[in-house]
Image 1 (cartoon, rainbow, N blue to C red):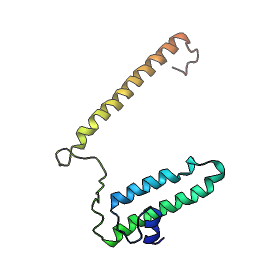
Image 2: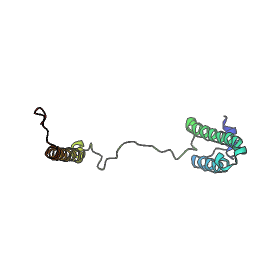
Image 3: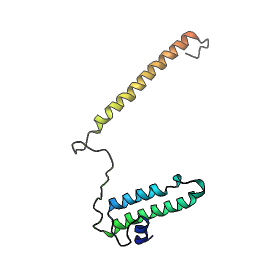
Image 4: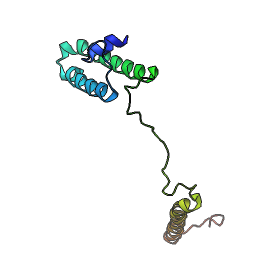
Length: 134
């Protein structure tokens, strides 16, 4: 899809240079107008086709605005992944792992006590006459 077609489909004049927030706002407005779930069953195929065209126009304008190196895109954001660090240091993974270690060891310990208690109670209730079993 060419840039002129994409701009006219989103409601901009053909030779305009919309900014990123304008493109996003126009896309949201057009999506609300032409979303396929808003139409009856007989009109859904046409609405789906129009919805796909609008999505394609949006992605075309976004990629075109980023690819041209134009000055119209002023609100570029950097997305960071991972856990933010409060002081900017490396952090201490040993201190982070200590609570989880306590949880795991406590669970194993309590589970072992319960299992031993249950085994002892069962042995008292149903004594074995087999000399090879405990």
